[in-house]
Length: 286
Image 1 (tube, rainbow, N blue to C red):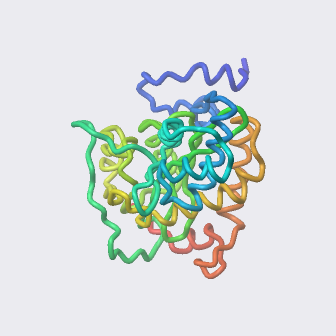
Image 2 (cartoon, rainbow, N blue to C red):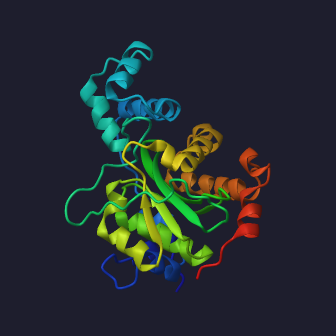
């Protein structure tokens, strides 16, 4: 008997020997839709988060005090610093100069920091270096987190996913799907967020024979290409369409990433599209 998507999602079991990614494939549902559940917030908080998101995207050096002052003096909100601090935590923002860190640094035995491997590295082909990051996405009545994996040479987005929580499992499953489609990179770069330093994530990457690299603390320029991706995603899609719910957001982003990979010409790529550069210069996995 054919079941609806909601019924098929009910069969997913995180304790199962199969990963969530494989279970979603068997059940023929989107992994992104499995992870999405709306996160409620007050209308005031949602409005503030939307303003903070755009302001921080343009001025990532703004910490909580400066952002609070901007919201009070320039935007007319009678709010206190504690509210802004709380929203920064919810959104995964940190103004450690010169830019944002997507999530808190992991602590304890089950978290490990890896050295930064991209300094002075000459990136000459696709599948040489992939990078991953997470950003906040507003939707009507709530918000989501978007993670993406980008090939640094070609700017080709090899994987992405939506979720209402930032977990290592979610990040691992997104990378696993990307590897299944496009092979393995030689180096995989992230920030030092707890999702990426957790054993569950780091062991998955290293067991693939991939060298794991992590940005230096407070060094937004280490991951500059994916930060540029977030600007494009938000200004060319998310802010324009103000999605009503998670399903609409997923469908809209799916169309956007198809456009970004297959049609959007980049000045830095001599006005070629990412897919052309990626396919022409791809290093095959060993």
